[in-house]
Amino acid sequence: MTSNIVPSDPGRVLIFDTTLRDGEQSPGATMSHEEKLEIAQLLDEMGVDIIEAGFPIASEGDFNAVSEIAKLSKNATICGLSRANFKDIDRCWEAVKHANSPRIHTFIGTSPLHRAIPNLDQDQMAERIHETVTHARNLCDNIQWSPMDATRTEHDYLCRVVEIAIKAGATTINIPDTVGYTAPKESADLIRMLIERVPGADEIVFATHCHNDLGMATANSLAAVEAGARQVECTINGLGERAGNTALEEVAMALKVRHDIMPYTTGIDTRKIMNISRRVASVSGFPVQFNKAIVGKNAFAHESGIHQDGMLKNAETFEIMRPEDVGLAATNLVMGKHSGRAALKDKLKQLGVELADNQLMDVFTRFKDLADRKKEVYDDDILALVRVSDDAT
Ligand code: KIV
Ligand code: ZN
Image 1 (cartoon, protein in one colour):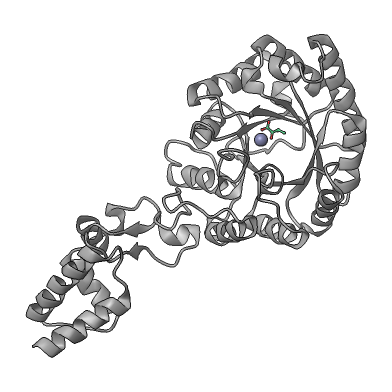
Image 2 (cartoon, rainbow, N blue to C red):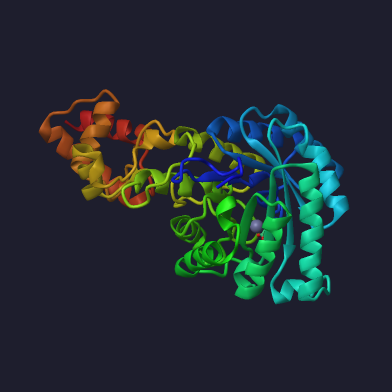
């Protein structure tokens, strides 16, 4: 491998975050200039390798945000998106060129459906790819090229255009599953096929960019990594058009927790996940679903008596990750109708209340009665039950 964009460690997976570009494309997720700068700074501090900061030709605002992020970011490569024409690419370069490490990302839809839009036949499109990637490479030595809708592009044509892009100077080839259509085995087979068939494939990084329309974005991304992709494109909270993109937090934690079967590393400081997840939810106006993997309100919460009892004895009984590894202070034992006596005793201890066994039994009976009527029993409710029990005895 000759390009300086390719990591020397073969197990290192680059994390490319596109919250500020693909994520912001979700209808209604528009962020202000200041909010974008804040999120970019958090991504940079968290260890994201490449930040796709926006689509500079799209608007004055996007151009300014990408330029400012390029000037301010300390560690990450800053990337901007551009369509396959010189004007877009020049505008993109004007915005990213301020970065310590700039990247131009240029793309064109290569599947039959997408080729029909600009009305280009296979040869005309191949020529356009050659011209635009060559033009981008004359401006910048770090070029990413994407055949949009790659997973619905004919394999022979995909190999042909990927080879053209590599020869024209692309250093990263991204394989987008633009409409979330692929499945894990197919995602892996596609990357493996490209690595085997395309001359020059070992000189560049293959990236995987998945959408979640069938709920398989993370699985498809990880399958692509196992087949040789070394860049995962993702967003915080899986923010993105329609059902969203691959969620950064899921990929980072899956590779950390299941390192035994997926021996790949990222540069992500996972303890920063919760904070950035909350900030992205707040500035995008897209709340995180309660049962969302890793960052949902319930991801580290337990209500059932059997689970709470197990958790109090050994947290590993029902948790495969430590809350502190994602930046949470502690597991949340939610007090509700499924909670048992051990959890109530533990909760009372946390509240500074120690009861004799018979009074604990009395409070527990009252607690169960209340929990049958209420979704969640709060600390104040429990203290009130203790007072009622005191008065009754
Ligand atoms: O999903 C997609 O195809 C994209 C491209 C612009 C890379 O976001
Ligand atoms: Zn996308």
